[in-house]
Structures are given as C-alpha cells and as structure tokens.
Length: 106
Image (cartoon, rainbow, N blue to C red; front, side):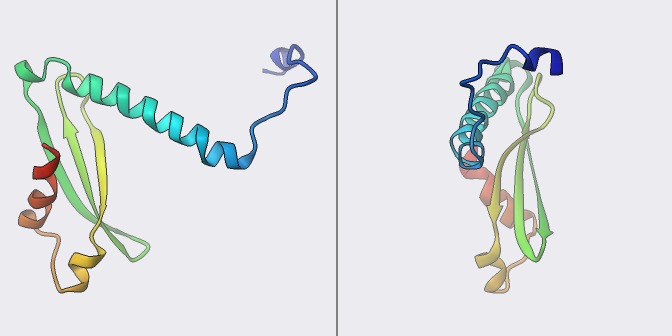
C-alpha cells in the first residue's frame, strides 16, 4: 500500500469524516443491499426462501432481527426493528410478534 501511495496526486484530499459517515456509508449500504438481494432472489423459485427472526437486547434497546436465506445467500440481514414501543406496553418478543414483523417483508 505504501508503494501505491507514492502515485497519489498531490492534489488528493481524503474524504472527511462526514463523507465517510454519510454519503459513502449510504453508497456502500446501497451496493451491499443490491448485491445481497440479487443473490437472495437468484433461483428463489427453485430453492425457495427461508425467513428467520430473533429478538435481542443490545445496551437496553430491544430489537428484532429479520433474516432471510436462499440458495446462494445463506444469511441476509434484511431489517433490524426497534421493539421499544411493543415492550413498553408489556409485550414480549415471542414467535407471534416476530412473525408479525417478518410477514410484511415477504
């Protein structure tokens, strides 16, 4: 890498932290989701798709993970859902709740 850095023009300006956390992060996410969705749907009519979900709590934030798997994409994280409102009214992250979050994504 150091050998390659010698050839960078003097006018080169590295991206700012705002660019990395904003525009470049969004672009990277969009590319990743496009590739993942493409692999997930490849031959989906032949292999089918599997939907999976689980409830987790990270730093006191209740979340629900929604994953799909297909013939060529073994795990694809499709969504992470904030379950705070559901838990605040006394709900639990049981199979019925997780299924209600997965069904609209199918």
